[in-house]
Length: 399
Ligand SMILES: Cc1cc2nc3c(=O)[nH]c(=O)nc-3n(C[C@H](O)[C@H](O)[C@H](O)COP(=O)(O)O)c2cc1C
Ligand code: SF4
Figure 1: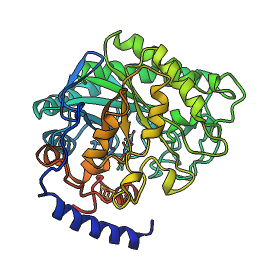
Figure 2: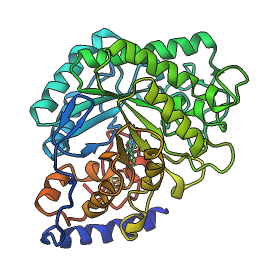
Figure 3: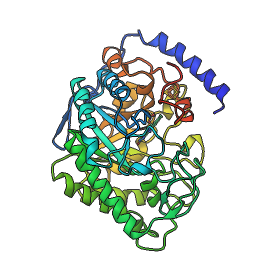
Figure 4: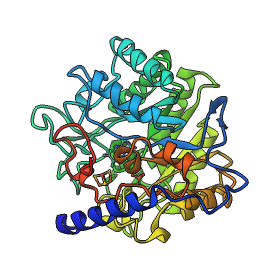
């Protein structure tokens, strides 16, 4: 979308929001509804809306949550979601793709995160730390010439144009596994209610799954059994570190919509089954890629005028429901209550919905929906928040 078109869409969306925000609900809440409590593993959550992981770029220079970060999350928690998933938090300090990304690379980080968790709990929400490795998914090019950039193979990232400085060795793969397990344990010690493994969106770990990025000829490349080996090792190590009952979520691609060199949906199903077997508690279904343009992105545009294009990974999630028993959190393009409620009552595996841009734009949207389910989200899916990523704290251009 061009900037001009984005501004046009944004203006139209703002008018629509102001008109509809005061309308009375005209549809009855269905049998399973968004505002009933839900249990995932042994974790009770007050409703079915998750604030999906959002990188706010608000850490201090140690990679710890700043007071601004805490204030942002408290405001979002007071806005009504049952669960807040954090920014992707890196487990290796030097892998951070921006100077303001969170990091939980050693125990000295724990007290600062504990302070943040306590504030979010006080604001009424559960909180889950998302953990990951960036590799070449480093939009800002932060310290790119001064550090190693890891990846499955030395393939240039189509969005960032960064090529990993090395295809990591098996020793380094072991280090990746260990850092993810250590990070998970630290998150648990800091009081997080759950952790989420970031296995999607063309970040380093998801690159292992996709032949486009993974050209390896060892046991971590080739067939899906090999391409998923690292994630299975991570899951086993994380489960061992945090114990049998702690909620461990994984955010994955239902499919990556790459016609050539992508991960097929059957491979995705194999992957999901493998995660289930190794003790993942729930799957968050995202998808898409950063290669083919807007229509196949995890964060698609032009959603408000075409409600049929919203909640756009629902069909993929239905396929997963036939293969895995795990609860599913469905993320991507959720912006109308009636569409989410319909899907909730169509697919019994769905337990919650993840929302990112709508809540970035309007942190109190969930409370508004509680009062008036027909409220239209203010966000117009222009993706300027992504386009401006790394140029300061992440904000919605409408605010
Ligand atoms: C500004 C911004 C930052 C994001 N940061 C993360 C992140 O740290 N981790 C992640 O898994 N997804 C991240 N996402 C993707 C969202 O979690 C979500 O999958 C995607 O935006 C689709 O949901 P939406 O239509 O509700 O925005 C980000 C998206 C945006 C717009
Ligand atoms: S949250 Fe992002 S996508 Fe939504 S209106 Fe604001 S800048 Fe645009």
